[in-house]
Image 1 (cartoon, rainbow, N blue to C red):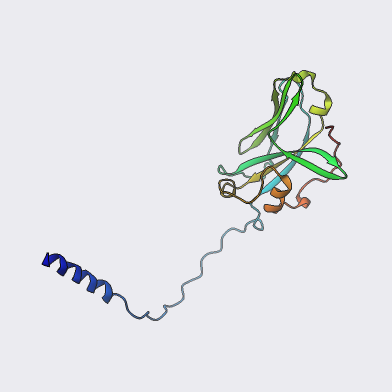
Image 2 (image 1 turned 180 degrees about the vertical axis):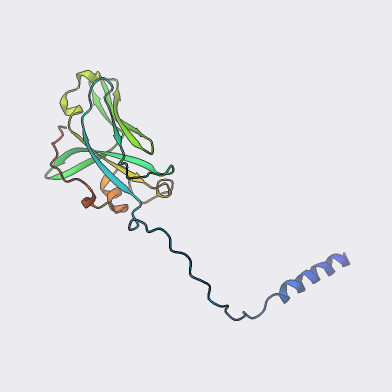
Length: 184
């Protein structure tokens, strides 16, 4: 028991003797090397596409621009221009489901780091859909960096305007064409 007390006393003396006044500041170090310039801090990107769904597969492969590199950790969000009311664009996040008397229609997507595939699926007869459901769509693909996608954010990812504002996706980066009005 005495040896345990002696050991604790020695350890206590060693730790307390290490504490003392701070010494003088050392000499300044060398500056680091300059890194590669970034793109003004942009981390999220948006790309806009116009397309129509056609038989037989009712899918559209939208390639990301060749001068853009998506990281493996990044994710893609897809929004369709659903309608325009009082000159205000209304965007809906995919997937979207429409209900008909004879079944369901799903607008959905999947993606790789090179493209996004937007497709129609459901229990309705896709060949019987009118042009209002298949033609003249506008999609915005938002590439979200992995560090944002995996964490919780205070934004609703289903709301395109909140996503655009949060990631500072200025409208000047987008095409400004006149869009066809979608029927309800």
